[in-house]
Image (cartoon, rainbow over all chains, first blue to last red; front, top):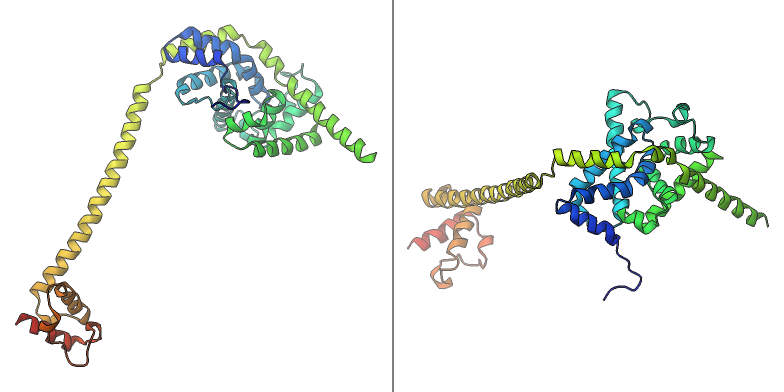
Length: 184
Length: 147
């Protein structure tokens, strides 16, 4: 018997599109890109992706996701799963960039605060927050973005990151405490 | 009052942080040409289709490698034990009893233990346990078994 509060982890429409893509329907893949590309771009940019590379990183994330979609078991929403793949893509990008010595800072992700021209439209607080996020451990940064930027529940975050809701909550509070000191 | 004010400040701080976080990356997202991105993704997927067969092959290779390791290990262990026991037996059969140590003589006796009745064995007086015998006494017991 189904639990009365249980909701499907994958919205039916996403699930249907995933099945259609698995059956070879390219239009279904395009529809999924159209639906989730902007939130993914926000997440990547928030996590430190240089704006000039956001498009490429979004593409790479979808390519990886579609190629490994057989491993997606509906443990969380498709978008949440996609964002965690985006985090891995960004990490790999940072490593490659660090090897090329293009990006000097932690994990190869660029210092937003030090590049005011490209982000001239960003407010001072946003720039401070972006710079502060780069100082956080990756897990804290991703939990913070999934919670504060994407508005996800701890249970959803925990399912996507293979941790517990309690641990996700702790990571979030650590992140908030450190970011408040930076942004105030 | 002071505590309430501090809590209120903290909540305001959290809310402010979340508001800023919600705006983070909006510019990059707004500038993304979603349709173009979708076309590029589909084109790349078409050029480099999902290689499920390769994945299956890789999985089978891993399974086969694991089987080889397990079976090979089992064979190696088995051969080691079989070789040890056969060498030991051949040694006992081939050598004169005088060359055997007390432990080896006890091993030989143990192999005969099941087929020898207690009354046919000339156990020295005063001894009730073969473990208490020295090498000379054990040789005497074995010679009595030879008839």
